[in-house]
Length: 173
Image (cartoon, rainbow, N blue to C red):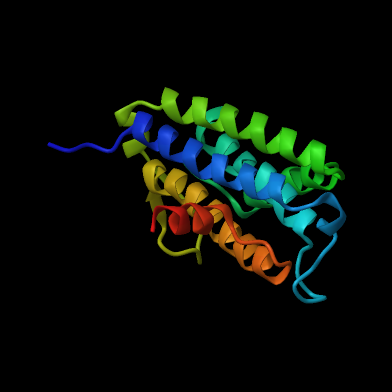
């Protein structure tokens, strides 16, 4: 049987984060305040958010090992991540946080057992579905990062930068 487990998830996460770090490195720091529209995050705010977004998953699945997450828990974890993101104010601090926090999260992913990944975490009403497997929730962390990286790829285009994955594909053609 083909099994996608903790090691695969950690390796995949490392690849996703490596690509995010490359985007962060390629955008000049003087463009970090750029916003695609006035009501969106700046490049710096988006990258800082990405650097700290693993906090929610780490708290739920590895630190507090929750089997039920209340609305208050979500609020507290998101607030803590937001505070940490707000403290990242330079390109260097953002790249450092992306690197160190990303690797710390990968190590936590690697440590998860098959039984842990199969456990379900419940949510209060009216949230639907009423529960999810830890495995799905942890994959959601990677999906969240990829969502924001897609936004950054478009912003790179707006700044006249060809994203590195596009350049690599063009070189292979």
